Image (cartoon, rainbow, N blue to C red; front, side, top):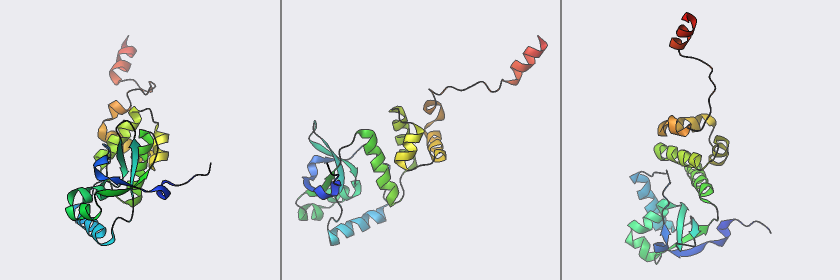
Length: 179
């Protein structure tokens, strides 16, 4: 079967059926939110919201486009003009892949919150994803991953790692020499 990008199947979804995800580390300052509002007011929605459809809850969970979603929630003029409907492009991926997709979308556009980003690295690690997987799917080098791990606490991030005994404390060495 030939691959077809999700953007070719944009659907119109009532905003009430769309929910934010719990892991997006992207933050937009008030001046940029004002500019986004002006852009949507003047140009309309030119890009769909990217969502995952949860059959069991019958909702669309945002992967990318949270701030475009917020504009409709916060501005009655936009809600009324669009009749409460948002353009949605649906992706079908498990949660770890959706998290990675959110990060890729954010990083391709600009900045995101470091504390929230470190929590995502921690969550992915707890799901069993390796540093190599995180590096490949989130576009980070190993040093960046290590720095983010340090923010959430190295001890929990490395709890299952086996370390060799490359050194001994000085007190133990002194005791063995005297015996």
